[in-house]
Each structure stands twice: as C-alpha cells, then as structure tokens.
Length: 327
Image (cartoon, rainbow, N blue to C red; front, side, top):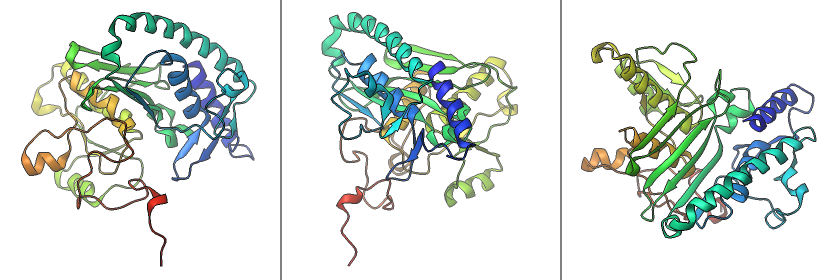
C-alpha cells in the first residue's frame, strides 16, 4: 500500500504541473490509460510473488515493452516500465516492497510444494490497477488490484479484490466457494443508503442501461473499475444483511456490464461474488435459455465467450492489426 500511495500522490502532484504527469503516465495504443503503478504492481506479482509457482498460465493486463522481459536481475529494470521511469524518491519503496513480497513468495512456494499438480491446472488473471483512468485523475478510491484464479475448465474459483486507496484504510474482499471461504474488510467510510442504485461507469452508458434506470426509477451511481463496482455491490448487500432491515425498506445495488471487458477485469470479482452466494452471469444465455452463463477464464488470443451477431465490432474487441485496410 505505501508504494501505491506514493505513486498516486506523485500522479496527482505531477498532473498539476506543466508536464501534466507525462513522466509517470501515458496513453496506450488502444487509448486506455497506463501508469507506472500498473506496470510495477504486475511485475511484483508475476516476477516476485508467483515466480516459483508452476501455474498453467498467468494472464496480466500489461505487456512488457521490448527488451524489458529478460533483464530481471538488473535492479535498474525495476525502475523502467514501458518507457516510463519511476521517480528516484519512489525507487527505494520499490526495493523494500519487492523484498517483502519475495519473503511472502518463499512461504507460498513452501505451501505449494505438496500441491503442485493442483496449481498446474490454475490460470491466474491479474489486473494490477483496475480503474487506471480513475487512478490517474484523482479518483483513486475507485481503483482496485484484482487477482483471480480459474480452473482447467476456465471457471473462476478463487480471487481477491483489494482497494488500496479506500478511506480511512484499505478495503478488500476474498473468496473461494469450493473451500467455503469468504472474507471481507469493509471500513464504514460513510453511512450506506438503504436504497439501492444501478452501478455504472463514470462515462457514457448504453441506451439499454439508460432506459432501464428510467423504467425502474432508481438512482445511477457512477464509479470506475469493474472490480470496484462489484465490491460496492457486495458491500451494500453485506451492510443490509448486518443491519437486519426489512427487505421492503432496503435494496441492494444492481450492476449490468454493458460494454466489453477483459477477463482480468472480472475473474477475481466473479469468484468473490460466488463465495458470498452471488453470481456474475452473461445476459445472453440467461435470457435466451434461462441458464447460468459463466465467463470462460483461459489464456487465449481470442474471446472464448464470443457469440456471433450479438456484439458490435469495436477497437476493444478486435485485433486492429488483422482488420483489412480500407479500399
């Protein structure tokens, strides 16, 4: 958390300067935001925490830049992420955080030695900073770190979603339904309303969701990050249950993901929701066949859940390099 807080403070400070934060954040080719936190957190998880665990695959949101993948022993490598340099006053925090995580990695390696066959079936999905846009514009309380685990069939079975910048302290949720494990730490930052709302992106929403809000006469609650929104949904439900209020006087939140997301956005959150008795479903299968339609979490260059004629082609769900040139 101290490392994330330091990078966040640097982003806010540099964004107000003449540089506009260009040294610590940038825009990727797909027009999404990237900060030094995204690259650093993913490296710490993959190269330090999970380096000695033989998973089936590890899928992270961020790609290493050219020439950055095979120089892990070079300390300077840890300070360079996709062409951006971590400020010198933050570099010591990178070192101490890496040492702490490597210590945890030793314990993890020892605990997995007797269960290697089980771990070899798992695919890990990592979103190092879910809600990077919010993280980079001063809405850090809406971002989260998501680590999800899927079995050999692509089913999300365990996960943790961690909000490092929640006030007054970090909040988190973790779960693994098959092991009967469901835990959370939600600090009561404010009194939760007994009235539920529809959780949505901070940006524009689809006509479908807009009309749904109007028809149901419920408030729209804007927030960033898929993991964060699912935490808000779960937090509202737990709060209502703990207060033991009458069902007719208190309502949970509603969340419909009306735009394309990547599997690292939802794997951890889906596993956590299921551990608490909830579900994350694909509306297509639920509406057409009245069946539970789960997302598929396996390493793949194509969308394993793609259904022809049900989605519009966008820059987010296509490989731009494979599109034919206009005539």
